[in-house]
Image 1: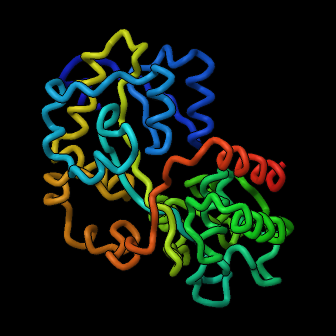
Image 2 (image 1 turned 90 degrees about the vertical axis):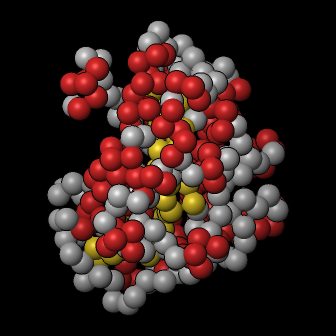
Image 3 (image 1 turned 60 degrees about the vertical axis):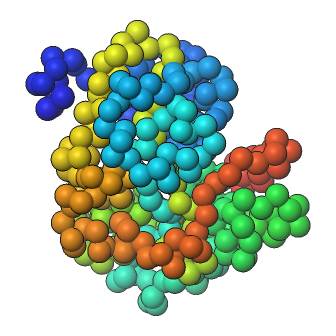
Length: 306
């Protein structure tokens, strides 16, 4: 790894397949044992409130100057505790050879045709699942209205018999989407392009109703015993050339403006990676919800998945 060669600092990585799994990892040790964590925007405030995140030291991360201010302030407390890493959307992934129509709406996934029953996958996350149902019904994915949430729950309950899995699909040649066990599902946009390497019939659409715009951040953990090394690593990842290479490797949009200038034009024109302004205008960022509304969503999620 280039960072290790330059600095002599060893990097050991731990992987997780969902934000929930990451939180469980951190909970096991109360945030100890890790130096840098990848945090989704909606979790920054929560983890900072627990005292697990180190306040951002801008003087130790000079490459922060390259980061678009929009993404720094997109989520509550993000500007104080995180450095934007990537941003993207949540939409529908499907097999064009297994789905006999062009997918355009969340309802194509949530009210699947008979031929797709048992071949649907969903992201097993309350925000993503309920958010998709709310958008399909024409509501905000941040809705706290009990009647709107009741409608969303009914829609997800009706879909449930058609769902093969609520686990996130793997991104290798054994993926259920590649093998054909799954024909349509929810997925983060850039992951689609990884799976397209195994099958050209795989496609992604940001539904016409819009979806979620997410941002991932890199944060230094307050319990870290190697904070200087952690900051150096985050600064390294934000060197424009490094950030540009990383964006192309994972197929996600970079919030690093200097890196964006180094990207190939065809990458920047790809609507999967960089959706149109119109598509983004219809989409939303998850916002902080009142405790009662969050509790209601957790109960809905439990009734559907468990």
